[in-house]
Length: 491
Image (cartoon, rainbow, N blue to C red; front, side, top):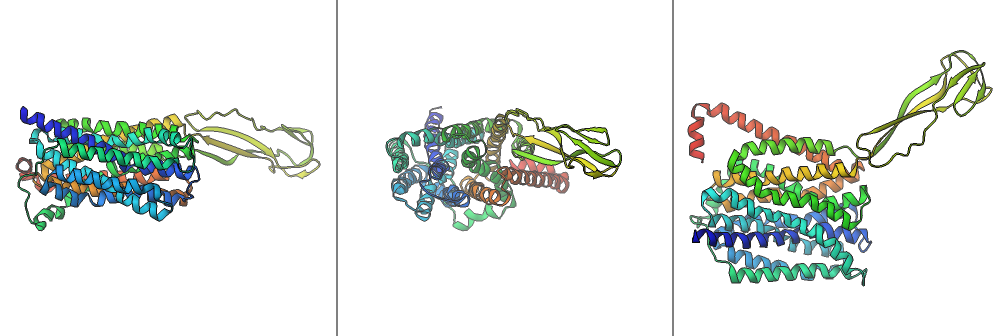
């Protein structure tokens, strides 16, 4: 047990450091939104998308090499170096004065995102097989670090900007940098190094699992459940501020309600995957992702269309036009006038109102069946903010469970290459976090719909489910004679 308590200490250090790294990694979601909102920088929707994506890109692309370094040299060394190095661009961020300088520094501090690959390799080196699902699930809870930023940073920014509205924000990256330095020192003092046994292989052998299509399939699931989680934990803030006109702090609270449960539930996802098997869990995750993103696709909208009109029942002259009737040769045709509804924003379902607008004038000659008043129907859908929030939280939770399920697959299929395969899957997933805000930005520009991002997520979810289902059916078909033996050998 003494051995396990040592492992638990490392796991605690890892998870703590990863949580802080994750908070730094998603810093731009709040900071850039704030800078644009306050007019300190005039970046476009697309430029904002890029700035949200760039740290995610560097933190993802370098996961693979950092995962390999961790397997080779051990987590203590790699993690300490990473924490201290990444504090430097954060210390420099206040000097950024243009899109490009901000982008370059964001790329550099984004490397904190590789901490995931370090932690996965380093944690799995300390735990026996039957603990892997739980340990990696607990470590993965560090994703909730995204919630620290969305929760604390908006309030901090407002507080820092009270005295100095233009330069106050510059203290925020400095605070983050200082915290990274402190944790780096904690690591040097308290962590104990351990490399993954059976790893000192050549580069070619290390890369060999990447030829396996299965790695790419896991990567695609992770693109959805992790990539879009990262993308949305940043995209939600501008989304709420634009569509529902919330304040920065309120929008940050809502974004926290999305990223916190999703990060924390990851440990539960590890437990579910240990208990029911990762595949079954993935079916549920992908299924719920499809259903919820479908419900989230409908934007806040008002539609005007042609409704039932009023036609003349005989030929003649319009003898009288009042607000709610038209008389033709003494015959009265009633008109529904528009009711001004005190339509509040809290309606959950679309609401319909119909009325008619008179199109004829007094003394005008009309024929039988001629239109006297055209019908207008208005359908109003207020995309209730609370319903929207609940759905967003639910999809976040399902992705959180999915993140653990994907990582549960890895030690099972690739026991000796957890660092490399974990790094690769993390890389593909992180690319989702990078491309997410950029694609969302372009889609928003092109369609003018904030919900266009959910249409995109819906399509990706459907593709993942189809690929998974097809793979399983094919595997069953081709291997049925030896299927059971195969499963035994795979585990």
